[in-house]
Length: 64
Image 1 (cartoon, rainbow, N blue to C red):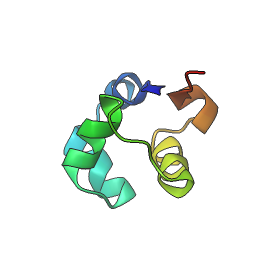
Image 2 (image 1 turned 180 degrees about the vertical axis):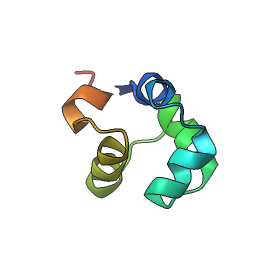
Image 3 (image 1 turned 30 degrees about the vertical axis):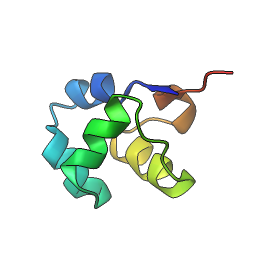
């Protein structure tokens, strides 16, 4: 799975740490999400999308 988290985060001028604080996870979790090395729970995906003012569909690109 690929994500556009870094792109959306940059648009909002948020650091990884700030985004992590908003969604109540560690910064390392955001790093792994941005690199596509971690598949988030539906709740975390929703929380990240909400924090970045977008939808899960816009933020996450699912590979078949």
